[in-house]
Image (cartoon, rainbow, N blue to C red; front, side, top):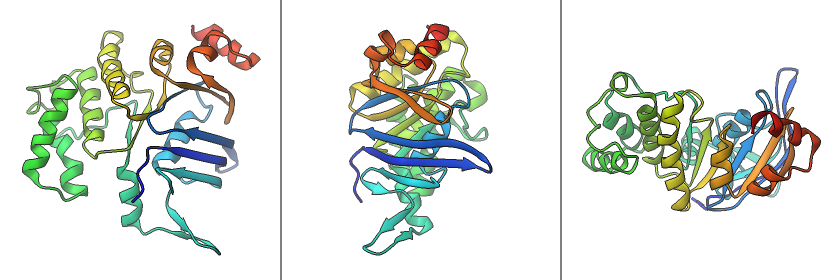
Length: 255
């Protein structure tokens, strides 16, 4: 299986019923690149992430993730759907962290992290347990493995969610406004973990309202509105000197 940490899209379109959510999206994310996506609510940011993760399928266009078409393979004469097992294998290489933590409430932090490697990959439980402890340490939660989600703060739960995604050994990490459900004082805890991932060379696509994080960490910035990418470029350049009027108006409200 090719795993190169890249995302390439051409002419991506996605609709739900009569509503077009993504319109002719072109996307190029290099291995190890940190791309932040900003824009108003309803602009298609989350749907784009869900397409990259395989939670949604594109209606038109080409989307390659980790060097492969997602959900199908191409021959000289046609495209063919992958088996559910093969699609599941592809999706394990793209981790995603949502606004809500989505932890299993009846499982400890350690068991939440172990669930994917054991239940999906059928890995060894002892190895998965050791990996879970290492991942908890990497997100600053050593000693919290036996805690249930209800015993953790929002910031701690989100860090467990990140560790859970990392347990599947992804090549790409997607973050869908991972700090929006947190108390302001907990935001820094999660952003610190994401900055550490960036420094380690993880390919990351981050939908965010945290402009400071985008300015400090992102390589590229995309501004989306009404299902289109309105502006893209170097993150610091776009934030400081946006070229498009729509981008300028948005940044004037949020900066």
